[in-house]
Image (cartoon, rainbow over the protein chains, first blue to last red):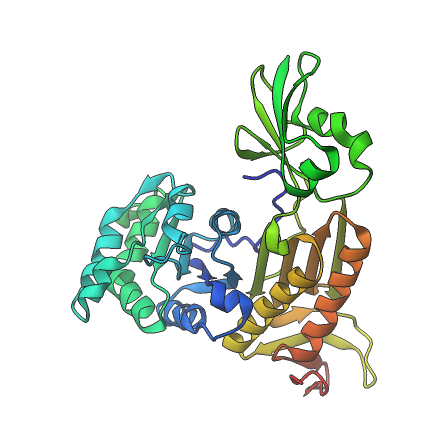
Length: 173
Length: 217
C-alpha cells in the first residue's frame, strides 16, 4: 500500500457484502456513460448480495490497486468492470494481480468461455480472479452486456466459493 | 551511506541537478534526501518520493547505494488517487494519513441534522439515478483534478436511509497547497449538490417529504 493511501469503504461483516468498482477512463472523465457498474450491482442484488458501495476509479494502476485493497478489506466480494482489454490503458488485470494472494483461474476461464459462446472476442478479455484474504476479486469486462454475461456464468458458484474461503464448509450452513 | 538522488522535470531545472550521489548519515530515511534539497527547493510543492523506483514514505529506511527519486506532480496534473463512490452503509471514520506526502488535506462532511422547518427530522433518505450520479461524480473529480494540483480526491455519498448525526457525504481533497485543497473541496461539494442526480427525503415522526432544489441543473 502506498504510504499516503486513505481510501475507505464501509466494512460489512455480511458474508454476502459486495463492492462494485467501475474502471474506466472514459467514465472517470464523464465523457460517456459506462453502464456496467450499476448493471452489475443490480445483478448482484438480484442474486442475494448486498452491494454496500459502487465506485468509479480511473484506469490507472495505482488508484485501482488501492481501491481493490480497500474494497477487499470492506467486503467479501469485489467485482471490477472494465480495463481488461488489449488497449495500452487497460491495466485492471495487472493491478488485480498485485492485490490477490491466491489465484482462481477457473472463474476467469468460465467467464471467458461463457462470453465466447456469443463472440470469439471474449477470448481477448484478460480479466483474472483470485482471493485476497477471505475476499474474492473478479475482473469483468467493461461493456454492460459482457460484464453481466460474465458474472452470470459464475454467480451460482460464488456462495459456495465465499463460504469455503471463509473457512465454513457446506455442513455448517 | 551514499545514495543516488535523481530529480525530474521542474525540480531538476530549478536545482540544476538531474542526478548525483549524496552522502547521508547512517540510518537515513527517504525524507532525508528531500530535506537535503529542501533549502534550495523552498517550501511547498507536492513532491513525492520513490526509492528504487517504488513510491515510498519519507520514513522509509535507506540502504547504501539506493536510488531515491524526487518526483514533482506528474504531467497533466493527474492526482495520485481519485475515487468516487455511492455507499449504502454508514461511512467508517477515515483512516489516519500516513507518510506525510500531501501537505494540505481538506475534508468536508455533510452531517444529517435534526432541525427542519416543519418539525424534527429523524433521518434523511437519499435516492440516486445511480448510473448518472456515478458518472457525474467521477466527472467532477476529474475536472477538479484538472483545475488544481491535487494529490488525492475521495468523494463518498450515502444512499438510502441516513439517521440524524451520521455523515451523508464526505469529500476529501489533498494537495501540496492549502489554497488548492480548500478551493477544490469547495468546488466539489458545491457542484456535487447542484449537479449530481441525488435526491433527499426528510423523514419525520409525522410523515416525510422530498426536499426540492437538489435536482440536477
